[in-house]
Image 1: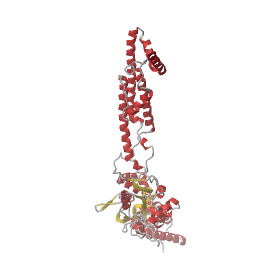
Image 2 (image 1 turned 90 degrees about the vertical axis):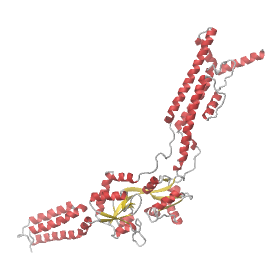
Image 3 (image 1 turned 180 degrees about the vertical axis):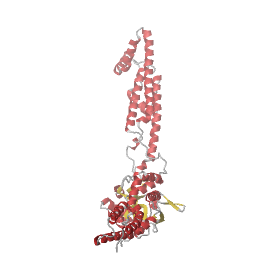
Image 4 (image 1 turned 135 degrees about the vertical axis):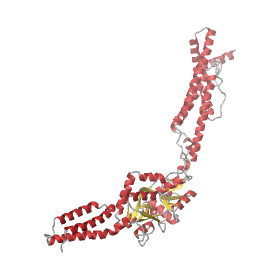
Length: 519
């Protein structure tokens, strides 16, 4: 029996049409095209008259190989063209009911992947409501079990990529990275520190307030000595505003208590009014920030990580039963993680669902251990909850398919393309949007630039008061110079020397007292 070139070409055309169906999903077009070209070349170079026995057997072998290839992948090609069955599980925000349909992050991801690969799908909920756990006999339940038994083609959900699951089914590149963390109520906070009353202002602000206090006290002391209205007879009178009294008076005004006697001169009153205004605004800002910091101090958790959780016995804690989180602690060799697992196993503090764990955390005195991504969603939905900063056991969420399925490669490529295009980040921001009102976080310490206006007002007041005191002394010196028929500068210099030299003023006062005694 001889094979004609025309018949071989016709047969190859049929094979080529089949391969076209297969190529869309297996990326084998290049390989099959090259194999087809080689085969046709051999056929065309051989005539029906001069083919020897070796060549005929070679052509028959190639024909049989291609026929075997067709039958091997016939089921795959039919599966690609037919509707795929997708299994998932209800969990906010991955898959949620909306009428008769499902919506959520995984549903949007499935829609985008289907557009890229060109397949139709039908979504069904997992029957037993589980993600997938292997029992002692080696059988799988949940979504993983449905994929293993062929009841579903794909499982798309927050399925954690683990070694055990990778052995049972094929899993794609992760479409989301996550880890293990702790969810608690915000009112579970650590005790206040000894110097928490200083937290409303930053260190720079406190230094600025101290400088303003000392500067104001010094200005009051200087003005009370320069102003004739405040100290009219330096030779015989004692100045009421000594340096210590100026410091005391300024501190009293800062605490809104007041400490007499008060200044009588215009210059002294200008300085005091400036300081009073500064003190009122400063205290208002202080108490406002102090109240905010006390309200939000619950963000400083007593449980900052898993070591803190294991070292305390006041807060009960647990995780989702049969989850990869539980397997992480069970299989870990870390002593802290082992203690956490043994405590959960001993107290049977597992929860049956994410909703139950979140509900118990909201009720208080319970710390829910779970996937950080899911905990972030709970924090975004419930403003009284907060997630601990520590995240361990980083892993990813993947799509599961039958073991060895060639569609896994295409799904992974599609996921990477969506990630590089920013689509996954967009879906994350869409479904993880926070419902909490912004601005309720922990207030930051007030910086000096926040009070720069009041520092400026105080500086202008101190400068104006000092200038007025000099003008008052100059006015008195001019009158005294006219009476004594001396130059104004001479009299002013004598007044300044007398008023600013404390020792000379004391000596003059002692001499006056001695003269009175002798008289």
